[in-house]
Length: 325
Image (tube, rainbow, N blue to C red):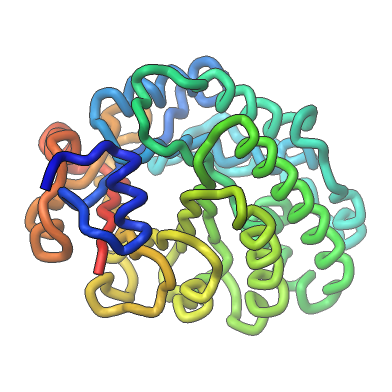
């Protein structure tokens, strides 16, 4: 088979067609520069040029999506590269009423992420690789907004929380549409709420899945590469696999199912690696896992960039290998 371009390879894998090799992508946090759209754009481009992923994931600071509603990020960078909320926006049940839909073109956090996308533009270092910005699901953001009080409010004040979730979903749809209009290929959609360690299945079915489905359906006609990131352990994978998307990404070494054994996802399965050695801080080495034997066993060889990433960062995090049936 002739060598494919990155976009051809990803598109073929998504459409269940033969590929010249298994598509891969690597990414990381950039906590020393991620408050600056220019800094994040340049760090992302240099990283992409170094490791040659088949798609480019934009990895923002985690707090960008809740800043405009009043959350304040801590200064300290945690070992996985993100910052915790030092002050949550929702401190009482009535605070849920303050969560209103935002205009992402002007809202702090969202506007900076749009600027990052614009600064990436059509830089030659991207090549024809699809670009996907990271968005967090509405219920995931509700947790960021409220911290540990969320489970209690879901039980005692469900109407107030639901009103906030509707506003968050509207904001996310507006952001995604603007991003897609700017030329990104799709969305990396992180669901941190469909883990049984985070929520009960009943709570996710009522307060998570409907809003996830609403968002994903809203972008379905425009997004050529929707990657559903299933975050956490004890995943509700049967529910996640029924969502509309092109690929599913999770830490297959940390939680079931095995990508070889689970065939329910309608698109491509993407086994994620998050095996961070805690001495390898995200603000130092880029950090990617060595997984040559794992890739050979579960889906075939990878490109030179993936091998280089594994060799240079043997204790790192976030290597994704996308598999095709």
